[in-house]
Amino acid sequence: MIRERRSKEKLLQYYRRFVEYGSLDANVHPWVAESWQRSRAWGIPRDSLRPPVKLSREELAERREKHRHALDFLEGLYQEVRGHFNMYNLSLLLLDNECYALKNYALPFFQKSPGEVEGARLTEEDIGTSSIAIAYEHKTPFLVFGPEMWIEDGQAGDAGSAPVFLDGKLQYVLTLVSTQQADLPSGALETLLLTVKYVMEHNLAMAARLEAKHAILDAVPLAAYHILPGGRVAYANKLGQNRLAPHGDGQEGQLPDLEEVVLNYRHTPLAKGLLGIPSYNKEVVWITPRKTYEDLTTVLPLYRDGEVSGIAAISQSIEDLKVLEAHAVGYAARYSLTSLEGDSPVFRAMIEKAGRAARGDHHVLLQGESGTGKQRLAHGIHHGGARAAGPLITVRCGDMPAELLAKELFGSAGEAGEGGPGKLELARGGTLFIDEIEKMPPPLADKLAAALAADRLPQRPDQPLDVRIIAACDGDLRRLAEKDKFPLALYEMLSRPVIRVPALRARREDIPLLTKHIIAELAEQHGMGAKEMSPQAVALLKGYEWPGNIKQLQAVVEQAFFRTTGSVIMAEAVHLPGEAGPGEAWKEDREAFVAAWQAARGNVSRLAGMLDVSRVTLYRYIKKFGLEKE
Image (tube, rainbow, N blue to C red):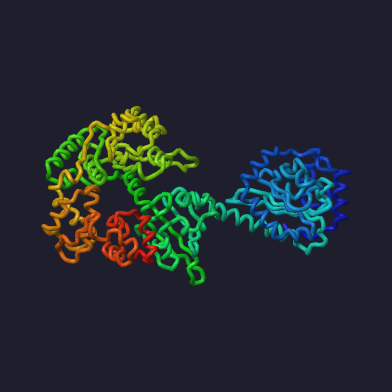
């Protein structure tokens, strides 16, 4: 493209000789000569730019939005070098691949104000010979000297244009105009134009690659983060942004510090990663004010000049992993009816009724106090039925707000692939276990009843529902329905049959079997030696009322198991709720808290169960007493 400077007087003579007599001098550049001939054939006026074909204000705004990245890039570049532009009276113009002017920077173009030029089409058919027309026609940078321009209003300055390509396709045309070419160093206009072209092409290519990477990261079922020292989030993909909401607005560059959002941040591998300690697929609890997440998290320290410059963290919900497994290959029940422990008459009667229900395909309602083992019974019913090869999906109605529960159950359509199936759809061919169904908002319960009645998904009416519901309720669902606090129609669908799960105090004779089973599970899970309860310890357990049922029994036995160093758990190691043990002293006494912490071996979930508090509360005391989770 670089052309030696030509005599403006001679070029003007060549131009006038052609427009007056049609004679082409041999010294006229062949591409310019061809363009002159076409311009004359089209009858394009030579004195000034005629009213151009122009986009409406709305159309221009739409195109600018489409090309926002390129415009932002050029705007930033121009702001850095605008002093150079002003010094040499340079003008910069960006056109799209149809030669519509998107933006005019600096001085007027063809004696027109930016408002007149922007949105105008500037092809050869519109303005005749110009650097734009030749660069566009031949797909290569080209410099046109003033007298070579077809329109005389443009002959005061020289102009260079360069096509900008992305993936081999022409995307833009860049144009630089100089009205003081003599003041510029030789080749400066061409060099500046080629530099902007090169940088812009590389920037567009990098942006395209980043856009693809962002699309991939937004599509995967992982929360991905780039975290800087101090905990500031530099980047989060869509799922990661949703987790940080409402603390951030979901926009990159306006994300919060993790310490503001993750209440237990200092006790996670994230903080250790910033010290250079990596973690791979580690089970991590993320506690936010809105929700608690249990994840598998990988943390990789990033280095610059030998120092940790941040971390990359990838985290996936363990529950989502279960759903993914259920969707792909089916998620088998973890318990069968025969694996449930008990020999009391009331327990045997429940198991017999559950076995009959398992062999059928009706929906089932499980009713019983909290902690009685309704979830395990649901697993057993699924395992014993014809749907055992299908997925078993769980929804807990007490875990999330109504809007999120609706998405969890029915999914969301979304745009551009942002939506996804709900658990009702994922459970097709299998069983959907709905825990604490009494906490389901009535409008959502009505929607579920309608879907079950029609045997169709609301968002997929072309496909049968093909799902068995096992619902669990801590109270009396019929009474709630009679009081109009739960849809009667849904109750009637689910209560075929109703299986009542007895409280632990109604089956005290099962406590030795249950205790033995809990201890065996703990020993296997933690790779520890077998232990047994002394007769006095068993008698102590059988004499308690157990308002929290089996779940509470498990917490007490677990606490005693870890407190005992030998193979026999004595009565002194058993701390019944409200009796001897940590009691409430741990809230003020650091030594009492440390003793409980050591008994739980630093396991936060276990300690929360032992102390009967939430993990959120527990982390406040961990921070209060200056302890770190190892």
